[in-house]
Image (tube, rainbow, N blue to C red; front, side, top):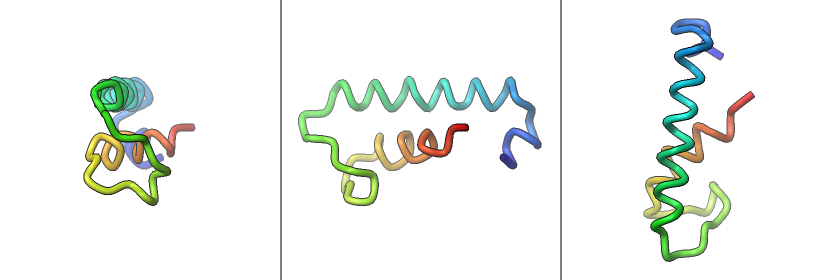
Length: 57
């Protein structure tokens, strides 16, 4: 991964942990059903958080 090569594995892990925490916080407060990533509209926590997490090694 480019980010891991640029900033190191420790920074990448902190980033992914932050993204996971943010995603789960948004998901816990959601009243709508969570759709697959390609069908999501107006649920930013999914676009920005789940999208980056789906590329986790």
